[in-house]
Image (cartoon, rainbow, N blue to C red; front, side):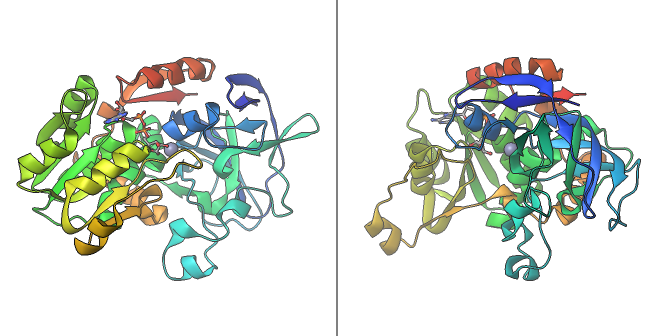
Length: 361
Ligand code: APR
Ligand code: ZN
């Protein structure tokens, strides 16, 4: 099967032939239908996150089950599924208390039971990014990396549920538990930030302030439910948010992955509240915070990984909200592209004026 392979960091993706192993007892073979381009893959392409190479990237995908391993009873060929990198074992301490997104065995589930890769190029092992490797015509994954979705959900939209949407909406409803009427600021309105905005709208936030450097993104944020916008390229974003809310918001979300904007989020909240880091910082990036203010004003900064999801619960919930017209997905897709156009798709993300590009196989 064909896949987009990263051979060097930094580098470009190269389309090449990759072989999959036969499904292990707990594995499912999927024909990939669609995969979104997420900024986390770009972090790998640019070398900001080290990865074993060569690697097949891509982790925001949906497809159709082709074959299942001997022990898999919950899926059968023909099932339409969405994948999620928050794969879980179900047996560790975190899974036991319901924190499946923190599964202690997540990394191990990204490989075969014997620890070898499911992906090969000739006799060379190829790393399967996040246990999915979805920039590929087929995916071989652990059974707890996928969930079935309703037939009415188009899979090129369903793909987005597995990363950008679950991360954004989940950060609001699972992580921050935003209450109706509360005030929210969102810094960075890309694929993830727009979903924080619409998550806040679904949660009934009273005021949703979108912050970006790009006017097009801010216009898009308004259609996703932002009540106010702040363009940080010509305004002091912290001062503007504090002014709009008479002293700060109840929850601020950083959706870029930069220390400077994490500090901004921390400065935008009212005392006693928490700012949330949702964007992924580069490996080694430290965030400096004023300790005195943190203590005397009871402020916090918390990282939220993948929207603190239990995706087997959350993805069907999100699919239903879409089918009821309460969650926007069509508007997230700026372009549908071929696998061969993946590098152009990432070039477009660097200029940053559009929402998601989605590879449709
Ligand atoms: N202030 C405000 N907005 C900014 C700034 C800044 N200093 N710098 C960049 N932005 C905006 C961009 O204009 C863009 O709209 O942040 C947005 C980032 O969006 P995308 O590139 O689409 O990234 P996305 O896929 O949403 O991911 C965001 O979440 O999952 C992580 O790894 C991912 O760290 C990344 C983050
Ligand atoms: Zn992602």
